[in-house]
Image (tube, rainbow, N blue to C red; front, side, top):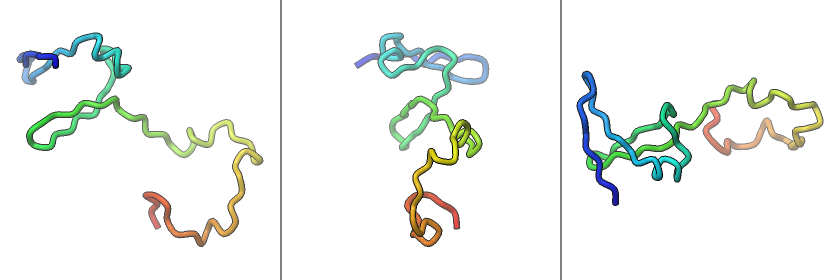
Length: 82
C-alpha cells in the first residue's frame, strides 16, 4: 500500500501518485482520469475516449461490415435509443 498526502493547490486539493503506479496502469502527467466515489473511497481510472459515429466508420468500405438478417426488427442488445 502506498501513502500519499493531500496538498492545497490554489482553490483545489491535489494528491501525488508514485510514477511506478502510474506506469503500471498506463498513465502519465497530463492524462485525463475519471473519478468516482462511493461515499467512502475514491477510484481513479483512465478516461475512456468517446468515439463519434464518423470516427468509428472512418476507413470502412462497403464490404467490411458483415450483414445481419432482420437487424431492424431485432431487440436492443445494448444501450440503443429507440
